[in-house]
Length: 90
Image (cartoon, rainbow, N blue to C red):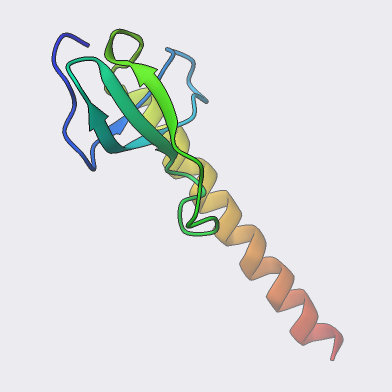
């Protein structure tokens, strides 16, 4: 990444389709970027900030975004199925 991302933006560190998505929470100087895992930020609100150089970061591709949406949808469906199963067994 040639420029610093803005606080609140989502970035990735590699090109894999299942890459972890990170949210920018702090900036330090011209190169330091403070990140937290955006996939668990609601479950773990007090995450330790990971510091990376901006040169390692890029914005997520459409493929990476679609993969993350599919994972989220599968988790929601699994949660629904568990609650439905619990209701049936009552």
